Image (tube, rainbow, N blue to C red; front, top):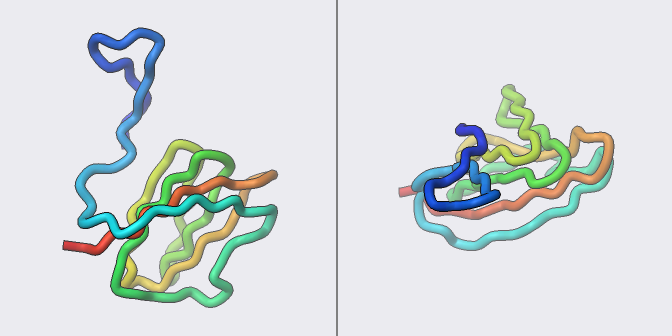
Length: 104
């Protein structure tokens, strides 16, 4: 996605767009994932999607056979229909926000 920029008419303020329209928000959570933590152990599927935002550390998203690494200040929309799991791949704790969305 985008890099951090200063928004017009703001001072000492940098912002980065993490995501655009992504469906209807159902709920949101924050997770603190310890070293080598994550889950579920077996990848799973469901009807809703997850918008994951890493605020500290790094997370590996397993998406079937594909792997995506999300670093601090990055986001990714995981389609619930694709088998998936999330694991901490940083040297410390990873903090991640998960927003559950119903696809349109």
